[in-house]
Length: 155
Ligand SMILES: [Zn+2]
Image (cartoon, rainbow, N blue to C red; front, side):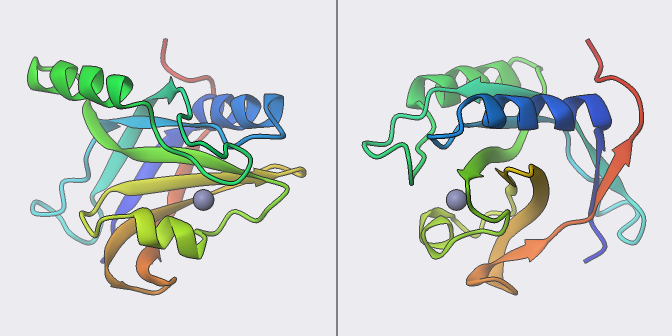
């Protein structure tokens, strides 16, 4: 418990802009950055979402589902192994829906501690979740507080 994630206002706006530009389909991608140092300071440690990597949604029904392009996943995992940013989780949008995980999201999610950022709109809002065993939502997701730093995202 107590895990928090920092994200810059610019980065969050970037994800929302991507979602709002494609209002008829779910957009998706990966969240990259620094994982929370839970072992070091459980109560206060915050991870940082440093960037996001948009991916093609390869689900057959993109209006209501998402599936991250496996090629993007492979590239990101390879980059992580080579010393690049850690993959913290994924993001996707719920066009016209609400920013809480759906029952299908729960069925799709492994309880592996990955972060799930969901943005929904209009009006566009975003929420952050962690995929866990015995989560508060659909038995799979716990809410994660987002610390939104002002200012633009890192280049
Ligand atoms: Zn969803």
